[in-house]
Image 1 (cartoon, one colour):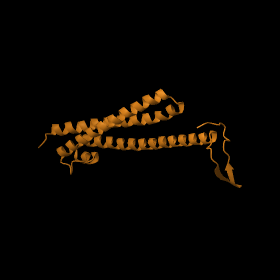
Image 2 (cartoon, helix red, strand yellow):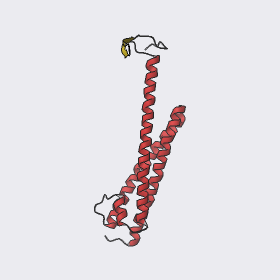
Image 3 (cartoon, helix red, strand yellow):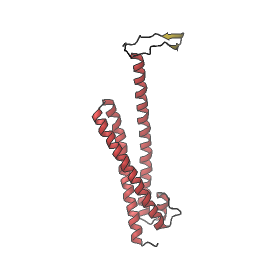
Image 4 (cartoon, one colour):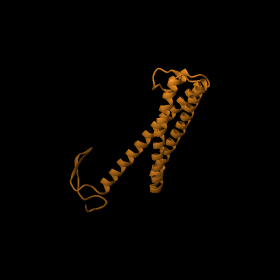
Length: 172
């Protein structure tokens, strides 16, 4: 099926609009990850529930948006005669005329930068959660040591950690 120039422009314009929405969603995900730390530190259960609900909504929207972008990319590939139905935005941009070429390439670069930043934020958040869990375990072991002896090794040799010597004595 041969498409008119107007139909090419309509499909490429739709792809540009969807990529703009992808940029907005990635920015929102970054903001949500940044908000997660302070909410955890304040132990704000209501705020955490709201934030997790927002994150879940954003995840669903992102999944729907990804499907719409993939379908539009396939239509753009067909319209421009790309090498395959799963051509990436960069390949589509190279086949497109101006101003769509520069618009698509600009949005592609922006999405790549945002995704890299989001990956770094995600990694930092995961490290923070891991460290919080480690500190919590350490505190619990200090306050409520196990009922069996544990051998620890210090600079002077082997020492035995004595039972029931924590700050609290708890029944199990």
